[in-house]
Length: 228
Image (cartoon, rainbow, N blue to C red; front, side, top):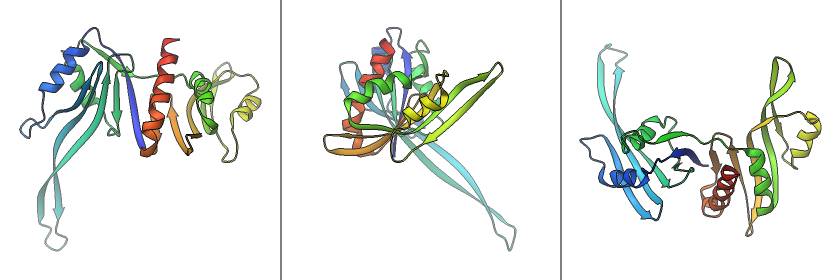
């Protein structure tokens, strides 16, 4: 599964400054980190962030108790897109810890931009996505902030491999307010059948082969929810 993460960026007119700095800040072995720009278009930069880590591993001989230290080098490469809008940073298959990457972007503007995780309104997104696909169905859903008493909120996870769980959730919760935390959907479009997962923190998981078809639809719908 391919993973995409988006971050909301307030560029403060620094978008072109950041892009120019990234193009100039090329990765070198001596520096241990840097960028490679792949393609620059109007208001979009496609590139990669590369970092180098040196790790020491100690292996002890069980017979002599002598320790040998080995040095291992790890390279991490993360593809990204920068867009001159609120959907500003798109990371493709990022590592678990992305703070170093985000700090590197911020430093390119001398920390004059604001970066925060994108918060998706999945309820609105579902309404926009349903008409765009054939046989769109939600087979898994996580709900939170379900208020059942003055001091008690609960979470709920529902799964149904055969049909859409949305109606079951509405009936079960009986008009209670809730927030959708994650959805797992199946869809059909252009004779392609597949699945994807969306999380409220701006995360998408899907098959790599789906990205060209799926990303424009999901990103277009996200931008509509941000603007509404």
